[in-house]
Image (cartoon, rainbow, N blue to C red; front, side):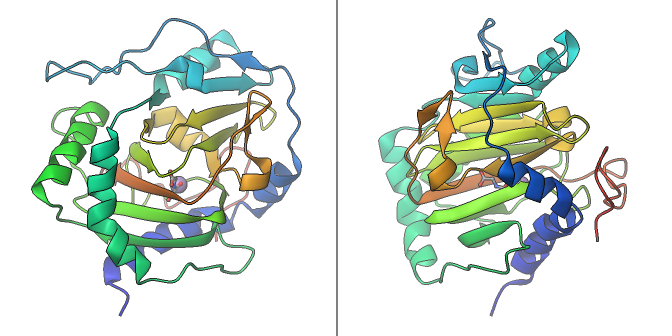
Amino acid sequence: MVPYCLLHWKRCVLTSFNGRQRLGKRLFNSVKQGNEQVARSSKVQCSNALHHEKSYQADQGSLVLHGNWSKETRATVLQDMLVFNDFITESEEECIMGEIGPYLKRMRYEFDHWDDAIHGFRETERPQWNPENARVLDRVRRLAFPVGTAQLRHVHVLDLAGDGVIKPHVDSRRFCGSVIAGLSLLSDAVMRLVSCAEPERRLDALLGRRSLYVMRNSARYDYTHEILSASLSTFAERRVPRGRRVSVICRNEPTAADDDGDGPAPGGPAAS
Ligand code: OGA
Ligand code: MN
């Protein structure tokens, strides 16, 4: 039986995607690499990379901006899309896979209807982790979420097959708050953000194996995000070989202000 929370989650992704077919189709035809700008400015310190243990520095070398960015939009997106390379060690990765791998193995990859947001995936949600992995997830949560943020207890585990793809979508405001924090396991991948208002503006993020990304506020609401398919997987004009990738994603609770009923994104049609 599929647990309720899982269905709930899928709905979250799909509701926000279905209304954005137009965007999705256009973006899929768009692989032009215009006006490339590697984000080189000084490193961003995550504002919540607090007083705990070591302080983490986001790696702006993992981001490339394409298209015309104003000073403001550029500064904002670089505050709101952060990549931390080597956030976990090889043995932490192994330990997480040791806990979720056997469970995932029993599921089949789903290749759903072409209209759906994600193809070639299996997923689960996990409220409880073994102590070693729970410590790693605590590290993620402390870095990604402001103190006192109400977080979703279930951690979303998404296993994307080597030939799987996550198409452009915005996570539902109804089910998820302003911060999405994801660990990338087993493979490098490229995540693309495209402005809903000005689709020629986009940001590519190289999500290295064992990195953490934090996508928050404007990056989470004003841009679609996607994981490029193996055949389109390039970063700064270099190929990024992509195999099976498992992401482990923490999210926060939406607040009343977040839930706008999943109405239209700027420039996008209403969600169904
Ligand atoms: C999602 C999603 C990104 C990832 O599940 O909505 O966009 O890193 N996942 O797997
Ligand atoms: Mn998403």
